[in-house]
Image (tube, rainbow, N blue to C red; front, top):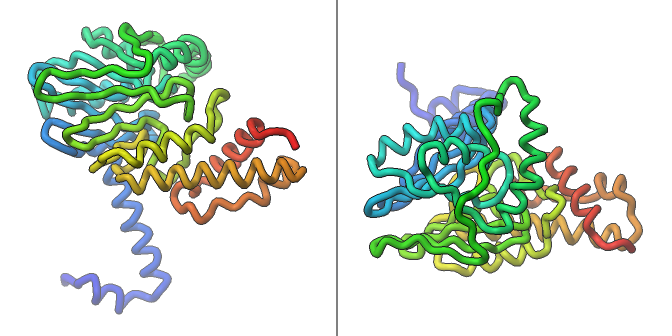
Length: 310
């Protein structure tokens, strides 16, 4: 017998309805993992998969004669993504742009370079990749489940200072360095005609929180960067992780970071210990941005280290 949703809710006890709604919500979220979304003509994004250690969103943009990929992902991640790109276009991939140096955005560089793709990032990102990125690589090389042995830490072959544009006369992609924020070398990609912004991890839109713990992160400038980006003419925000967003997503990420900094720095100035602040700081009003308590605790510790001594 087919029963409508309304009838089902009448027949089920309240607790069962609650479980059913939770299951439906989880199913919806799970359906987004590794799903490909067309944002505009010739513009696509593939949602990352944290459980498969390919958590970053990877996007691609079709130009007249070539394709630009945003985020090299992990080696196994980009290998999964390349067939998805081929489903949408037969044009060659010319560039891959890394928004910042973190492993889940750059460790697929060698896979791309071996196919003749030019790796691009900001000068700050390149410097961090050579230093902190190598440390990440060496540490993660010990993981037997996701072996890096067949791959190498690939440096970019094209770097830029503050700005670079890829323009074929029909489509223009602007790359702008905006760090230090999440990292020193943070840069965003922007399609002015389409109003599409690719933020890297300056903004995330999932329940696993954001990594504030990079030793060179600058939370206060990070808030300013997000507020500046929110003033651009945007239709779609593609975050580093999680579902597609809007200007409201940028503002929500900014509000979380600003509140985090304010509570921790003011508490430290008042003489509170880290242990006290781990108990006292309340970020619950930020919803999904503060849903991961373990990540919140890490963020509080990171901000405590950076906040001025009383």
